[in-house]
Image (tube, rainbow, N blue to C red; front, side, top):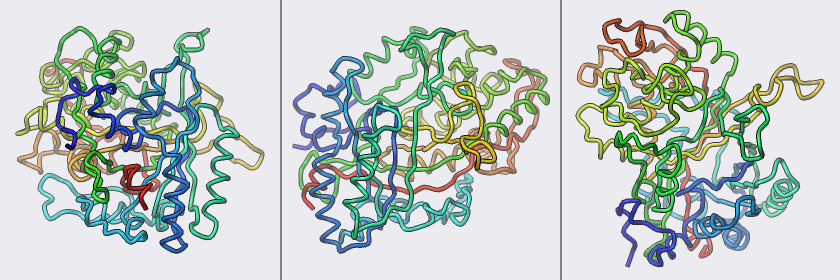
Length: 488
């Protein structure tokens, strides 16, 4: 009997025998981040015969696949244990077609069309049109046909192990595929104190904000850990990070096994302009008459140390994830309605939508920074005599979901890039919010900022933040089950 994917997270245990077949067939990094510090993504176009490509996947990819079962077993070992190389494998719709398989069996229209197809739906009433940069502006590697992505990750820095894995992959692909590009990511960790202990570091993204605070959790074990941490405070506001497995998992349609599942993966390379972002924060602070720390928090929704701006107008007051916008700040005079974490997770403030339905839009984020470290970690200087300026920084954004259209695309288009959300859905001509100032892709949209934190009587002020994040390319993939890969 197939496992029930709709059970709440507190009823799903990694030690429950009923879930063992699912975890053994499911790729890792979907239900929980793999935790490696370095991750490379290799983008491939098949060129050899269908049979030879299938044989490579069956004989080289499947035996080395990092599964959820292996990930959970490694999680029980002492901290610092070398878990070895992570290998994951994803196919695009054109990749399935190349292998002689009908991608129509995968019930996702955006997946079958691919990310380069930027056509909009029939209705643009709620501003759901695609505002991404055109594929012709993307990096060259992403403009080409992409059939598959191999993800390699390791605990160590840019290491002989990762280099050896890439060299081995290049050798295996000789005559059957070509590599268009390799994206190299590395986790950024900032020391919490001036003389930090080995574990006294926190993950950040390139603009300097604490990263990875709020994620959907899929097992009882992760929920217990969450509520024991400072993220799950005892304030009791009611935010539940738990999610059922069907938020990210769907049946693998090419496998007869009852518990063989996969997930849709959205991959986007997002360049972050550090200098532009800081300049816009300074301009916003001057326009509003507030300090830059508060202005930045009203862009992101949190201060750099993770303090939610809905809870405090200064950093360091209360690091937690237990807040609800509908209860704490429905009008958006503490955390503006356009703030990034509010746009992507409205927490009860979506008009005409129940909290339960709103939570079904969530995605499991698995991104990693790329480029030079944040200037707070390493000086921003050229790395060679031929380099004229700082290397581009950014995020290799990845997220898993059961539906690209209902989750990622809805979040990006109907929420983030929609100047009317969440206020004027019934009157699209009354723009009371603006787009997401962090990841919004429409440079012409102005946000509406509170003139004074926490004071509705002060009113709002218009200011166009002009996001400093730009899409460089990407693709939609599916994460097939191990039985599928092994059976090709």
